[in-house]
Length: 392
Image (cartoon, rainbow, N blue to C red; front, side, top):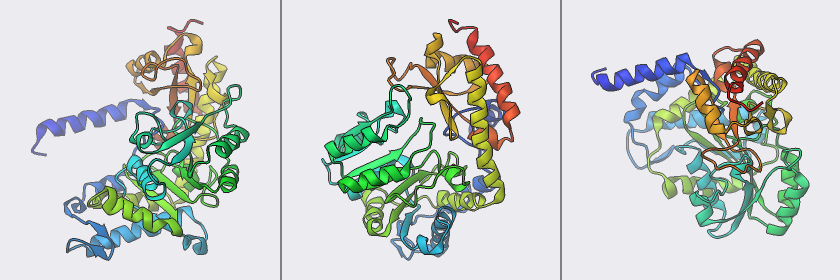
């Protein structure tokens, strides 16, 4: 590489990634094939429009790539060929936030109401948080978790939905460790005539691997990023029932975006094929096993795990219960090369930049081949580092 400054920084980051225990729940390590596609000549091609309807010439190969990515996306997540015909798929969104924004803009008139999980309880910024543009253009009602169980209370969600009458209900999380009951959400949406959307960005790889329930039997629209448990590039996919697909496609392009990133779409196609393999199913199973082992080991050492455990790839630890803020815990762990992120916990009384907990996830360390016995060792190390500063 001629640019030695950037080359050195790439090497430094590669060295950093290889020398740490990465417990960031939304990070993973892609394969060499995914990196190869990202750095391919598809970077050079401009492809405004959709396959067969581009605004530029020379897109015959890009059309094949995009169609292949769409075919693989449907095949991976929808087992029955007849069921795939009911769904449209868009692989052009640049990332998860614009994908969610595109769905809202396509299906919910500006100023109307939607409903989702609040950020502080485990939801996402684009589920209507006050600092997000989604809250400036639409009204929102937010549900959380029960104060005692720290689990979703579907009776309360139903009551809120009947009172607020949102046009769309979104289910999904960034920091909720339990399985979402999609049938219950479907019934709630049907009762008030709402569109039911699932943001499965965090658990898409677990769905693909068969270790987390699939939302496809119940949702009208499903969005996902591909760089978390799915172990792909930083792109998003929108699945939608055919009745919504045209409006969503028009909103993605030309409504919100220009030319798609063809190199990223190629990389998505690669990761989707990888996720169809038996090896990936074993990987997904191990991700959950590792998360449960890590949570249990920390719990045995006196650390309070939000909701008591996990059914997925992540969980929250209440560090403030032992006198440590999440920010302090994150910084202490990073000095010993354990990478986590500070995170609010349900009903947190501390500010988001210095909250009461940390979020831990196992997708990246599982990709590196770690198993349950390694999680016990990591828990011992975390405990040893933090308890020096804990109040008890």
